[in-house]
Image 1: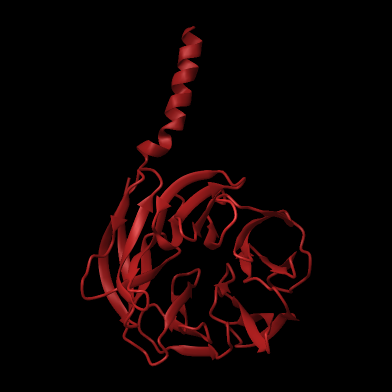
Image 2 (image 1 turned 90 degrees about the vertical axis):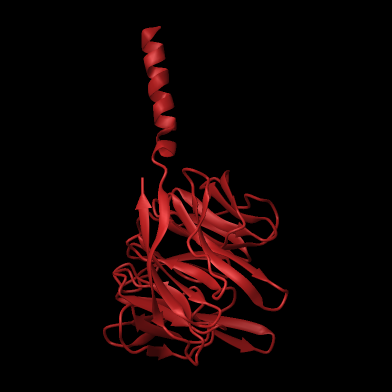
Length: 310
């Protein structure tokens, strides 16, 4: 009997460990990185070393590189669609993006790779229909083309790379979990539109926004674990904190917006900004998990340090 009670106590302690380790997050030093630009820059990605921001325009035409600190903005290309979910390779050597070409009512997309050291661009996948945005995991690149899962090595672009990895792609506004070169369609909330889907850093949970209902987090089997609620453009800061925005509009224009965070451990939402003069939007986490970048409706770019305490 004593052994039974001891075992039960250990199980209870293990189950509540995540709650005990609840993280408290607060906004720290904030500085403006760039003023409004004629291009109307939006943040598309942040380099793995945290030193560069990948920027695009409001309609995702073209991609640009800007140093986190001072320095000129470098134009990489002016390709339609290039800024939509573009991503760095894990080592920061390459950028992967789509090139969209509209031929009448048909949309054809190509998958491209840009090498930062040489400035060379190569075509990975030529024009095809229903090409998803690429996702990089380790030394592998994943994407769906005409519904088929494809993976390649990042460096030499060899097709059908062997090995094991996990990514989440979006196909027709539905999350597709890809594990070991196999795909599984997930619909945790049933039929509807899923956007802003991403895998947690530890690759155990999926974050997404279900249109009309809000943000949710499920496991890899599609079981809903957390319901953060109304958090738009959600992203993982770390395995236990999600960041996003609370934006409001009048049907035509954004009237107000703040950067917010949600703790999986405590279930609490924290406002990281609270201003009436600015509308802060679309936060992006830096790789260190302790700072973010965000933009405003007026086109300003900001860097914010975060204080995270257990």
